[in-house]
Amino acid sequence: MWFMKLHNDRVTNLEWIMYTLIRERVASMYELTYVYNLDEMLKLYDLIMMQRDIEYAKSQENRRGDT
Image (tube, rainbow, N blue to C red):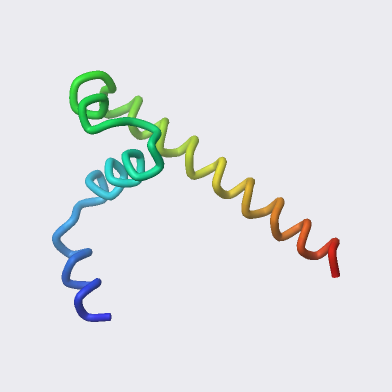
């Protein structure tokens, strides 16, 4: 969709990472700005993404087992 592409072009990867951490209620904007450094923020994001991948893989495995 053209409006999503336009919007994505204006947002940096770091902003998407911060948005994801806030949306997932892992950290607040205050914490991302004043508590965590960039390295810690990126590690936290990686942990959240790994957890999401593991949960997805388990759900796919359970889905195959149910059929």
